[in-house]
Image (cartoon, rainbow over all chains, first blue to last red):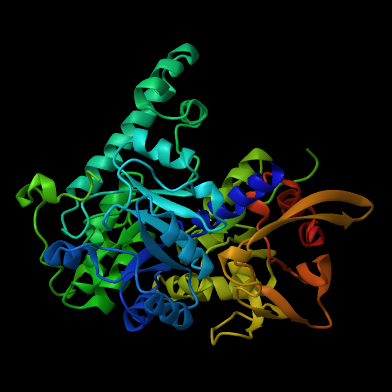
Length: 293
Length: 198
């Protein structure tokens, strides 16, 4: 029991260390170096950024181990990588490669439409996406050490991330004003573990860090998410699909550290060049949405 | 209530600085987050939290805190935890990276390996006849590989020094803010370098 507790301490501990830092999607060692030099707190290794997955279609899987290993050799910051939802074998491969953090991600094609990975079985911490408190608490119940919004990846449209952040915060606030005997039914309605629902009712926040992800494309987007209560941000296509990735990456790092200082945001937003072109979530067919996975 | 509590600043550029604030709140020690150069004027002591040292280095420069920081660490009590230890060391051995050379130690960043090797290890802290059980939380921790003459080792684990001091500088390669114990925070706030405030 104490060993499990210690393991959760170091898993959530690494998530805590990443707070107020920007996690950037990279597809090769050169991009990883650019991200590290710009001040990324960690890099997410994947084969294609979400906007390319969206454009090219096909089945999206865990990245080639060669790519991940090259990135591990190139940077000294933590290296994360994605596995398909429910694909515990991909997760075992990443653990064997000593990746620092695993993202069980809806951006990749799901491997299991019913079950997620039992994340308690791994020494490596997991982050999972969610759209609402119910999903967040189920993922934490399965052992996730960090939660991020799903947003709608690869769009450059921040609206879904905003929707998810606001909803989770509202649902948490609602729990804090319920009386103890009302929590039981609420846990049933949320389809979430009772002890986690009770934790939220008492503390008003998740027991693990909560980051924003999905559609963040500018310094102002990052600031918006931070002001809505995100403890930091993941940026996917937003950096390496912009006109000047170095500048965009640096600017987003500053915008997270200075999210409440509009003047600082103006400074870093000048001469950035064009952000990723993107497409609005409203223009995407429902069957092509990633966040519903 | 005879002890006057100093105001502790917590470097709030990146990392788990809120965790330090929570522990200081628990023991009724006033703290402020240090975001800007002028914040250093309001504080008596400084904690540098865990996080990524490379990110803190960059933000220190880009956000204009470096001069005030360098001045502060010359003679005020400063405690660097994990990434904070890396910043205060005289040298990083395994990466080419700037440090502020405030304590005479050489460190390897992530000296015990990647996250897979992060762990919690039970230990004891003995000081002036007191003995306290401390859980050492190591997360991609730096490893001290060389210790200068004027440096005192306060806790060792597996023959590695993990808690050390020299003059006004205190460093730990582990995360005291993640154990739930406030013992070391109390020590830093009230006992460490307390002569300086008599």
